[in-house]
Length: 276
Image (cartoon, rainbow, N blue to C red; front, side, top):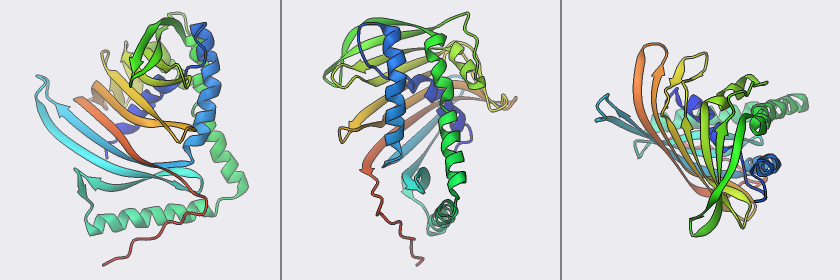
């Protein structure tokens, strides 16, 4: 629905990368957490869920101008996630729009069903490379164990992440790391992060500078444990003063809420919607 959402989600990845492991040393926690992140990342493609996105836009005085929402089903097509829009502004799609969504999904399913093994491996390689920049996290931040707090009624370690001034990114996408600071809440029983907060310290330019987020922007993200095998997104909130292109300025708050988690069965079948 929102062209800038792609860039906002890229910003989210920066804050969601570190997962907890052991409490002895903050840096060691982060290094080991990367292995946990890879393992959890592989389980993600085994689950479907529903995502509701609400976008509020404000004027320069902080007065609400517009609210829009979009609900999507995150499905598994050909072994990879696919987002299908099912509602806008909490109303089901019209018959015409629903048919278009189904036709687009059927077309994508057909395309994915005929990929060669070489093409599948290429897509998996690209999927992994999109997260390769996370390996630079231990070099990008100074980590500090700041104590422990209760999160959802369970004890969690708190880890603060401050960017290192001398950090020089190797991967182009890793340059964003030097412009944010964060805090991670680590569940002590599951050794997994349960909440993340991040703050933008310097202007972040994404997508050839077509989307820019000003200092002061913030991200909060929470996860939930499903079936004792995977951590899935539960809620995210993004506050940002941003610029689209070089002209339009926006002040926005985006809320993403997730629900209806289901494990994808390999023998599951997607049935096309019949036209009335």
